[in-house]
Image (cartoon, rainbow, N blue to C red; front, side, top):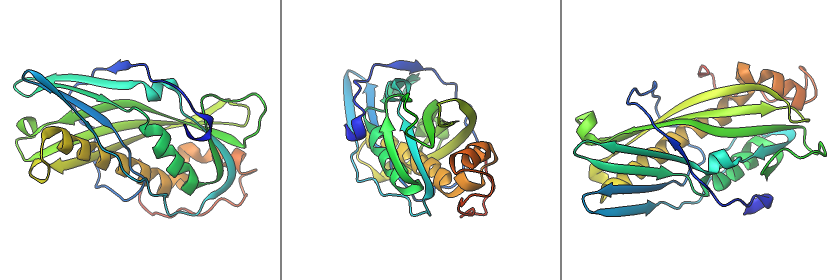
Length: 238
């Protein structure tokens, strides 16, 4: 895998109730490739959406950042059975590798994907993304033509020695019209991609003005008055 990350995913499970977090309209940014396995009736359909991942068009922060892709993130799996709609299994596979390669290339002056925090202090700071929760709803539940997905990301900020400084919990939302896709798997996939575009765009646009990121930015960039770029979006942080 790129930048030295090489781990074979094992699986940890997520069991979610249907109480969706607040949604927001999707923004343009990096995409996430997810693997959705849908079990219905007597067969299992596996759908994998592959795409090029655009680099966010923002002013890069002048810092060298290690992005830690943990086994927990790679092994995240959500299983759910919906009455009269079948059983659903959602896994991330190698999607985080491609996603955070694009995010790192756009947001930071220099970056590297890592399996863990190294001991040599070669980076100004570290970002450790994770997923806390995934929820989704199918048309039978929404009583509409839409599949909807909610993803709650957890971005942990660590200093140059790997000491955690703060977290940014970032909820995201996406939906897709079932009529635009050939099957349930493709529609759910598109909704998940929309949720990931929403989260990654919000992160890219609002990192420099996010209060929870301020201690990390000040330390990573060398002080409170260092050359951090101004906020690019006036939208309120979540």
